[in-house]
Length: 163
Image 1 (cartoon, one colour):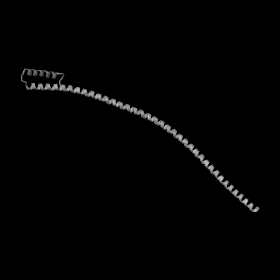
Image 2 (spheres, one colour):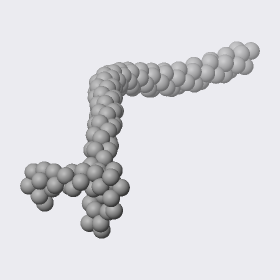
Image 3 (cartoon, rainbow, N blue to C red):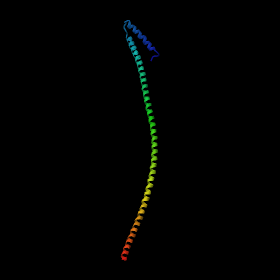
Image 4 (cartoon, rainbow, N blue to C red):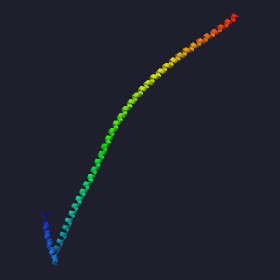
């Protein structure tokens, strides 16, 4: 509003003049009283300004400290996320290994299935051969029984005719 300290110098000079009047017990005019009020207000404003500046500095420092704490926490969270990412990568690698092992197990099961199939085919062939053998034995047995029966009948006929 005023250039430099012109207003402050004028107000200081006027306040000093009014103070001299007060010290000499002279009556104060309305203007003198206004000077005292204005000087008091400017002193109050100067003190408030200084207090506000100090408070702003404290608030700024407190904010800076809090932001530093928040930054540290964010860094910690970032570090934890990185660690989790590494663990997930390790788990992925382990799962890939497990998948490979399961594929090997699947192949082995396929081989075992083929072996069982081969054994089953062999059992079927053996069963068929046993059926053929049983059939042959059965037909041979009936032939033998028939031949024995024929021999027994012939033996009875010979006995009957031989007497």
